[in-house]
Amino acid sequence: MQVRKKSLSLRLKQTLFMKKIIIAIDGFSSCGKSTMAKDLAREIGYIYIDSGAMYRAVTLFALRNGFVSKNNTIDTEALRKMLFSGEHPVVINFRTTGPDGASETWLDGENVERDIRTIEISRVVSHIAAVPMVREFVDRSLHEIGSVKGVVMDGRDIGTAVFPDAEIKIFMTASPEVRARRRYEEMRSKGQETPYEEVLGNIRERDYIDEHRKSSPVSRAADAELLDNSDMTVEEQIQWFKDLLKRRHLCGF
Image (cartoon, rainbow, N blue to C red; front, side, top):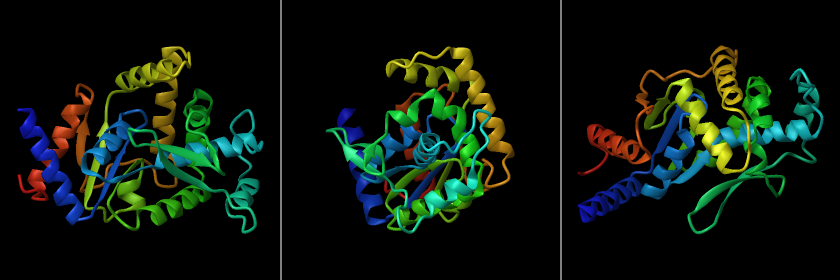
């Protein structure tokens, strides 16, 4: 049985390497998009791009530079000057580190992967992401990275706004309670102690902001496959994707 699994994985890699495509995974916060996208990219030998990490990095930059007030009012003009400055542009990129090939986020030459995963960033990131100018900055960066294809990219509007012509689009969801529990356990594993009720409240607030913002609100693309992973393991999600490829006739198994 194990040999069969390896055989499928090998054919999957060979097929998708010959036919370079863009795989767009959208969905609500903390529904497991990044986990699935990372594992999927590793499984098929594609580049993983975390668009949410870019918004978190911009949020960290804005907070460090005092562009966000205590009531989450954003100094958009000051932020615009810094993001689009010709002399000292903000640089956000991803670097692969460690034996597992994990991708980490770098901001102006500094590894900020841990800094952008805190509850402080989570409280502000939806407000930053709702600013059209910020979305323009991130979308432009994502287009540059993904133009070569052979990428798995996750976010809120990849399949609707960033890459509407992506060959495969997936919209992931799960109940707020399940997502809050996953986020809570993830934060605890990193030594970040935040009450579950606060995490759940943050999830619900972010859902509302993401669904009601004027610029690219989170929504399922008309041609996106729906995946509710509330009761699924990561392995079951990968198998779901393989079944999707079969239905799309993108793999020869």
